[in-house]
Length: 128
Image (cartoon, rainbow, N blue to C red; front, top):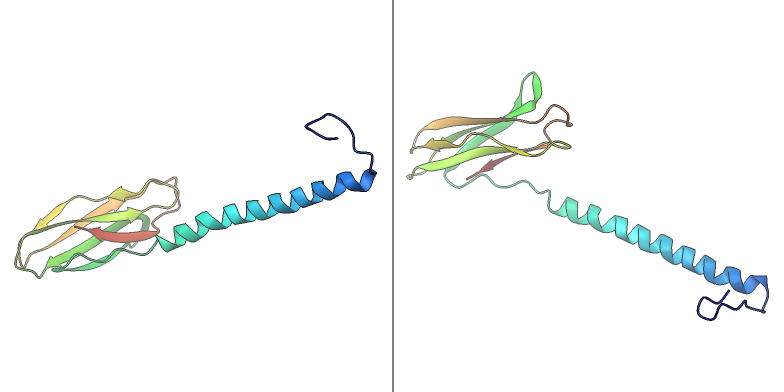
């Protein structure tokens, strides 16, 4: 049926099937392309952040709790610095730990805890 005029095509049943199969193939291609774009862009932005200059840090998960992460840092610079741990928590919202101020030569630790309904810690970052 012609959608613009409301009349039926007289060229036979094969004429109506050809455009439908072309539309199905076009829809499948468009869907595959749309699904591929977010996956590509999400992987490109998942690179871990660098540790701020002047700090040397060790990060990790708590020994018996996969939902608690920490950053233990030492200020090797000549100026006071502030840092905190940032946890990427999978299905739960990401969380930031307490802010820690370090004078030159001092060490300190920031901890945070992901929500228990999620999948645990995916990444650990140190933020300035």
